[in-house]
Image (cartoon, rainbow, N blue to C red; front, side, top):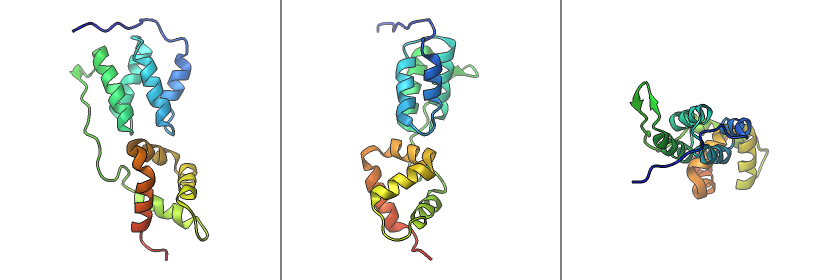
Length: 153
């Protein structure tokens, strides 16, 4: 097995990478920051990668950060980090209430695309988590969820 080599200096764009890694409304930015930071073995990149490996709501980002954390040999309280299981079912406990609020904000007919746009504006973090986790099935999930929501009062 070959030893992986890392650059030991701080990336020149570390402030930009920090901002991207903290962007809770864009999982792609967080994933991009992990992919760039994993080449730099410095205190700042280790800290960012560790936080994302332990706490990111989108499993793809968490998985990439965990892989980088393992390569760096990162630990938590002296113990190796563990990748938690991927959540199944509702990723947010109150998702049904959120979807009802969005649906009820429309005054009449609306398309799935209209719904997605309003969802993204009203609940950007929740939208990002579901869109990141579901990928290509996100739109179908919205369609099915709208059909299963309780009727309007």
